[in-house]
Length: 262
Image (spheres, rainbow, N blue to C red):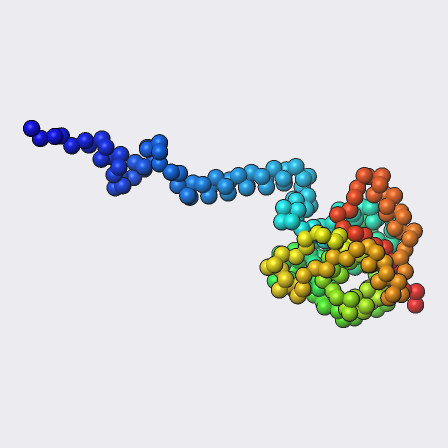
């Protein structure tokens, strides 16, 4: 008497029937399913960070922290209300110098009785429509800050610099910082990263030309003295007091310099 074949076993082992393997409790999960779960989890985390950060500027800052770095261009936008309390009418005509200047200038232009211009020291290949519009209007321009700026002395009441100085060697800082003080009437505010912070990704080194050199506050103070730049102690004290009232600690070093008295 012949044996009848075990059809149920064949069905369970067959690879020709779609999704049969998923019915086997001992089968391994699909690699695509694992990747999908990881992606969904990452999106949920990012969504949580976004909603808990209080809006778009917080979102940008959160992304900067997730990437392991801090953007002083984002920090400028956070401290603008404090700077306005410190400098008052000196915020009426501002020049911002540094990466992502279009975002900073757009923020400044929303302030009442404030005119703003920007210098982008690097390229604007990925500029959005708003940034391209600012460039067409001449409000923002691309310029190498290692060379004299195309402005007359005291063209602006206040000059704000973020990130840019961290990518310059002392050779160029010797020329750039005095030139920034030259075009300001009431002072220069410099935002620089703290030592130990991660700033540029490897992919961005081609844009910046060199990795960021994050220097200590004592290094900057010695440099200011050596180049004949004078710190604005009054403005620095007012800034610290205003920040303390709000229990606010800037993520970047903030230096206040006087303009050159020509």
